[in-house]
Structures are given as structure tokens and as C-alpha cells.
Length: 282
Image (cartoon, rainbow, N blue to C red; front, side, top):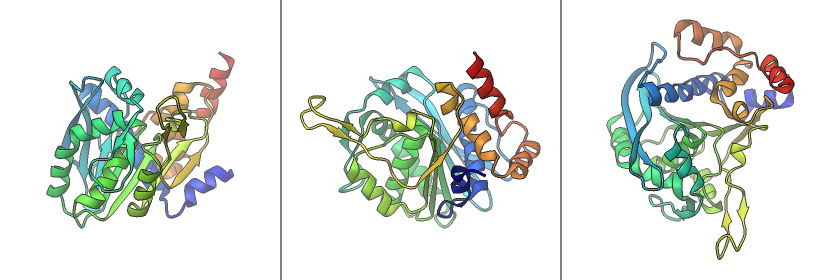
């Protein structure tokens, strides 16, 4: 087992099984968006879905995720970028003050505006579910940044105080003040990223003047959990399917149980080494 893989298994209370399960939930947000199709493990029942507005004009309303509940927990899953308006929002990297928490610095403008468009719906959902049941927030890529913003918002503005965050390939959501406030108030947070995936390096840590008069500065939130798979392809290095497959190596029995018990919940199995070799030859 490599040092990186060992860290995934033992990183400050991170549950390997939860990391695999939440990656499966992230995967499900994509067919839910494109086909309104959702497959969940038997113990989970979908209880809500939510929409948001993306794009420069913020006129495009899209399904951005869903909420599911079991006897033990509630999961709120955010989708990553999967449309042109999403990419337009991703590229709007100027900053605005985070509007829901005092002294929380500034955040990515495009992603913050998506969050603002869904925030009232999310708060209503959170206020309708049991506050004493653990709430898992998860998301891939853009969805990871939305999960981070939601976690800080919920920590300050709702009765939900038992929140666990698993993000995959999330970018830098805001400035140093935002990261500091988040790290102080959201203690159970795991930012899983592939060291060969360039998306988590965005936005850059610094955009000095003259980009803006004073420059822009971005910072990641804690807790950083690196994994490693090199597919020799920018898209595959970022794909949630490959994240799921790499994490599954940490507990193949659990991952196979998920696949067999709930057909369609997990991405199709991938031989990462064989696929990487194929991409290298091509």
C-alpha cells in the first residue's frame, strides 16, 4: 500500500467506506441531472431534490442535487459541472463577500451565485429534517464547492450541528478569511483530490494586479486527503467514476457489496491501470 493510499484509510477519522459511499452518491447526481434517473442503496429513500440557476445571465434552472435518508443518516449530494451554463459560472472567478456568515471573507462569484439561487430551498430542506441525525454533504468538482459553502452556512444558520463533508476534486472556494472561518466551524470535512487532477488547482492561489486593483487570493479548506491515479487524460483524471474506482481499492469487499446489492448505484468497474496504459499508447 502506498503512502497516499495509507493516508486515505487513516486520515484524521476519515471512514474509507463513507468515502466510497459518498463517491457513489456523487456519481448518481449526473444521471439524475441528465435523465432524472436515481438509483440508491435499499436503505436510502430520496426525500427531496433541489434546483439552482447557473450561467452569466442566471436564467438557466437546472437540477443540482438530491437529499436521501436512511435510519442512520441523511445525505445531501451536489452535482458538478455538466452544462455550458455551469462552465460559464465556473469561469466567473471574481470574488464577492460570502453573504450568509459574518466575517467569512469572500468567495468565488460564479459559484456563490449558484449557491444563492438554491439557498432558500436548501435551508427549508434542512429545517424540515431531524437536526439530531448526522447530515452528510457531498459533491464532485463544482458540487464540492457548493457543499463547502452549504456546510458553513448550515453550521451558522440552522440547528444542524452534526455535519460531515466529503468532497471530490473541489476547487478553491474562496479567500483565506473564508477558509479560516470554514475550518473553525466545520470540523468533519474531507477534501479528497487526485494529485494528477488539475481542476482542484483552480482557481489559482493568487491572481496579482493588474488582474484586479488589489489582486485575488484563493485558499483550499481543510482537510486535504490526496489520492493518486494517472490516466494520461485530463478528463479521466477528474472523472468521479475514476475517483470511485481508486477509493474502492481500499475496501474491495465493501465496494463489491454496494455494486451487487444495488445495481446501477456505482459506476461500472474500471481497470485503472489498463485504461491508463491504453491512453498512454494512444
